[in-house]
Image (tube, rainbow, N blue to C red; front, side, top):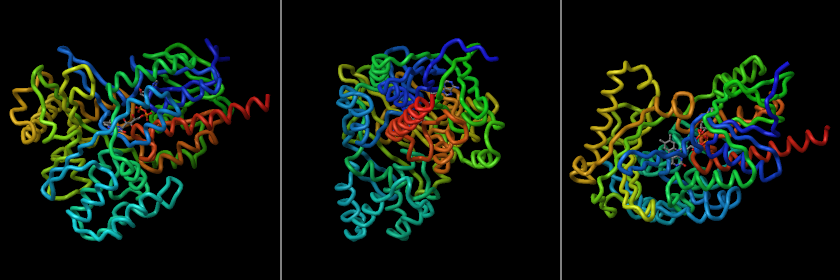
Length: 471
Ligand SMILES: Cc1cc2nc3c(=O)[nH]c(=O)nc-3n(C[C@H](O)[C@H](O)[C@H](O)COP(=O)(O)OP(=O)(O)OC[C@H]3O[C@@H](n4cnc5c(N)ncnc54)[C@H](O)[C@@H]3O)c2cc1C
């Protein structure tokens, strides 16, 4: 008979934005909640790090849609929501076009009609079609087919519409069009937003709110198993501790939850087959560059986000290649952290885990150096003399992301679209077991993760109520 050291209504495994939002929502509903995080700080991929000399870098604070304000106000609190501010200058520079935009429907309509010479009716119909898409809609049309319908042969238009969304949620032309349409429309409603004060402040404010609402938080608590008996969840194992709970919400990678934490023997063969077929999303590389005190960046040239590429056209496979030239530069000015004089640049590219995971150590190191060199060469065009201005420089690869979050293959956005149905079916397979976090592209990114955390918390709440009725 298992010995449990303590007992909770609900245990949440993992403190990504979805896990924290689920924990907060459930605690506010009156449940006794324990949040377990394997890292020494909360946030998951919504994280930051500091380096000697006062350098501070945000890992995934590059931009999210305006919907984050409403979600944070409803599921978190006003001080968090009030710090969400627009990033007004999004710059594109590639062999097909160079432009600056506020990245909303009004400005995109202007660009598409005046710069790309498209008929206004086509543009209006395209926006309306994308806006009407929902995650329960028909998933048979691909994004490529959507573009072929509205903009046949217009590779330049496809690049403008697709490149930032591929960056924002890892979706490709081959994915269901609805994964594109939902995220694109979310951004187009009002443009790109950020959190003023940096990720460190956001996570601190969230942690304070969790504590106020009575969530017990344990960091450096790696969960190694979810115990299941007779098709029902019993609790979780962390270190030597077995902790009892009526429900468990896993915010760790969907596949990791099923195959590592629970074990395939607890699921039906049909479910396992479906779960095995779920594809992971791609991973990323990043280069973090902190400017020496006194150095600055020309905001008029660089904007807030810069999508640059030397590739002649947009191609999914080129975006994942090690020889990539497509990069997104996020520029952080002192306004990101008011009261400081910090200028930093983070360059991000999509990447394949397999291109990095099997490299011998020396080659891995050399590849990281090459990544840094290529990035500096690309940045030189926008920040002349960049090498002399940098005071801190380092890089992260798909292996880094896997190490820090346990996402299989270092996936930046969890799983592809088919993961959503598997995530939703977990409680039908094992009573009391839920999953929340990056799945299905639309439930990824900061906004998707927060919203999915809330959705799943409501399902857990209904389950708890149902259990109470039975007892
Ligand atoms: C390079 C990069 C750039 C990005 N840029 C943006 C952006 O600009 N805008 C945007 O909206 N999104 C961006 N994203 C995506 C966004 O950060 C994620 O989609 C979102 O933060 C994921 O939240 P999540 O709740 O799914 O959990 P995650 O952040 O994946 O967190 C899961 C947590 O679970 C913990 N955990 C895992 N296993 C265990 C275990 N066994 N025991 C205990 N704890 C465990 C992990 O340590 C982690 O803290 C980016 C992602 C990457 C990688």
